[in-house]
Length: 328
Image (cartoon, rainbow, N blue to C red; front, side, top):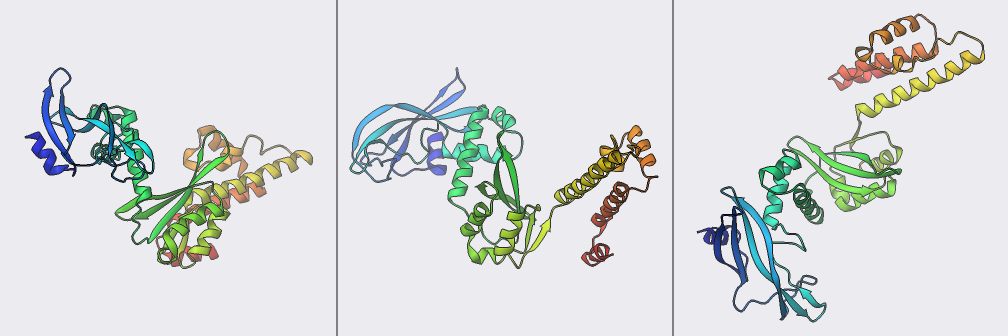
């Protein structure tokens, strides 16, 4: 019965499902797989058919569990005498390389790993976190090797920091209603690196991009202007607020040094977070300190008031009114 189901759902030319048995001690269903009579093995390096060389011990491949039982495909791999590559292990259509998971199981695990945590996915299917990780790696690598980009209307670019050194990766996402996915990962966060993404998608697709969301990293802005001049470049709120806070902090630090140098009372000392934090996040002590500080006619106070006034910008729904706010 199970062999018939496997033949119907996961049929591989050149191979047949033979004996099926239940191992009750391990709650495992074992399925013997053997090559079809007269079929030739294929070299795992070049993919060409080649004569057999010898037989390796039986390997176990994990298949999708059924009825609460683990399913194992058992197959003795053949080695081939390839004319171009020499003696190599054959390739099999249900697995890749030395992975012990079948491709079908890796796709299944990777689909589930998008929802709960990988640990929960592993627990649900009676496998390990490492196996789920291998499954996700396989699916990601396959997706990168077989990109189906389609039309791109909105993309986002960001960088992530890796390791303890100053190394970055550039990530490009498709960010549209009903389709949010990672499109591309590149080394570094340079113009040269980001250019490679647009070389991948080509001028035609780049010319149809309508929106690009990015931070204010200059190499990104220059590449976006070069390849997507027609697109609206949306600067994300987080980085804009970070720029405002950085400017305010520079004004505060400079003014604090000047006041100390000129002998004024150091009213800005220990006031950094009073000025940088949002009012609703201040502690009671910081609230008191801020009220006292706002009584002074200082550049830092004026910079703080401008920063807080800019928060109104995010409340606008109309582009026209938002533009008038900026022009005021």
